[in-house]
Length: 236
Image (cartoon, rainbow, N blue to C red; front, side, top):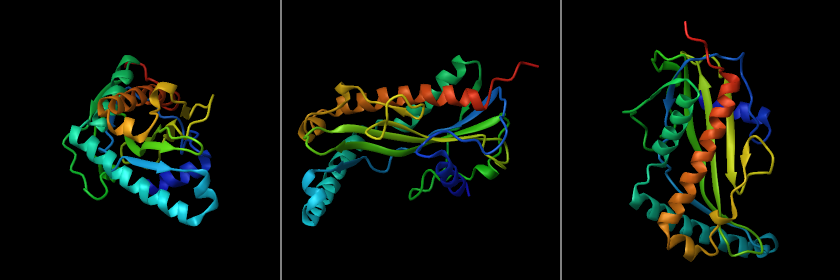
């Protein structure tokens, strides 16, 4: 059910803007559900030739699939735990803002659909639950360039116990899909782009640093928006 609600919210939000499904939900304590580790790190390609010639487009798709396999294998070999890192950064910033935070651990996930958590039947004592998800993580090479820029998009939504409605739901974009001066987007710095795929695949530590810097910035944006929809309750 939560995927249906999220999809509907995104249609209303128009490319990632935040949207509320109910009244504001003041909170003092937060249950944080980490994003599952990515199943795939994707690489997408777009050239002038792919726009003009169907065969070139098929070749770019095949090339992108192979590069995605290469990048996924490289990152999984390092076990970077990007989902847990993102949750820890969000938790740190929530705590700094005065919230009490518990990160849910020991989650039994479906290997084929690890983000599908039954939040409606999730028992917890905190005022609100906050679920983090990866929407896309990888790199993109656009037209007229050999370089690869980061693409890291996350879905975030919060819910009260019983999940009858969603107080905060959004998609935040870092890198390729971002636009300047938008609260749902963070433009990547120039040093987050790799000049070639060989440079990217040859420096996994630098790739990991790009992702971690992106997740830290996204965590700050998550908490800033969460505070608007779930302002901190005063202590009893």
